[in-house]
Image (cartoon, rainbow, N blue to C red; front, side):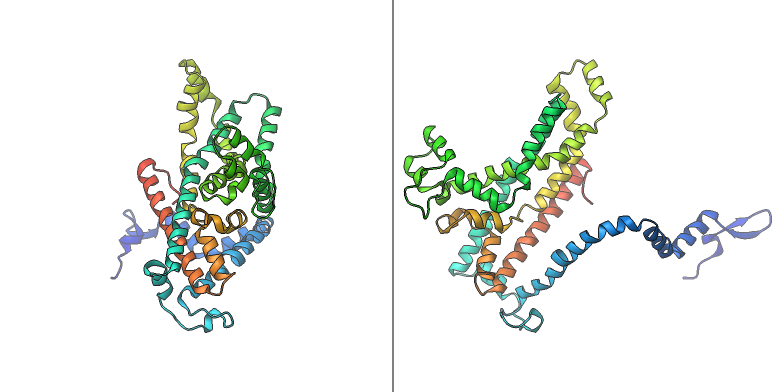
Length: 352
């Protein structure tokens, strides 16, 4: 449709001539020289972009390039040929996992159930702990004492997964191969309190499927709660002191200040962190589970990641492993979208 001069030009009624709007001229110039401005910005701040380069490379090599291997979920498994040369298998792996009648389907649904339960318990018990720690740090008046407490809670995060799981194993003393081994200090304490029997303590708690989820969650809180509290503590210390002063004038005590000043002020941070936590809800890494579980605890410990590792790396069915991981990731993506939509409608706070 042919445009008119009145649509993009301004009429000067005194002279009867048209001229371009100055603001529109600036916008046109910016659009015309957009990439020139981008190039100049990169050249000007080249040091910042140079520091960003390692992160870009990490995401490129460990996040985006491995996506190509997801084609293996739709190709006939072949340990010799590359994915591009394998024959197309359609959705046969997905049908096998979802609607099959063999032990493979049973193991997959068991792994999905365990993945969801471990993630749900981690969200239920693990997510509030960093918030409580941040509130506790905020009430410690001595800077030296607070620094000591924070360092002590941060340290487990900087231990490798192997070291952390070895400490957990020593505390509960898994005696699957060693004879006449005394129970660990945690097992002895639980036995003294009457919470577990002597047989369970001597057999090793990590050999009992009834205790695996509790051990996994408690060790996870111990490992990550302190480090995750950094974000919430940073949000708390950013609160204006005038808010506390106004609450004190109104007669609010410590608990009232925490309820009506601190928590509402960090609510947006809590919502954002909750959405990201829900997004990674089903992304349970296989390292920790692989180091803690054994054949005795498959019923409660086997998750999708270890299921895929067992069939993809240890076994020879890479198609089944790829299909299992893809379905797990699709469910995680849907959880992010759902959580973000609910948060946006309920509190006007969202990731996008």
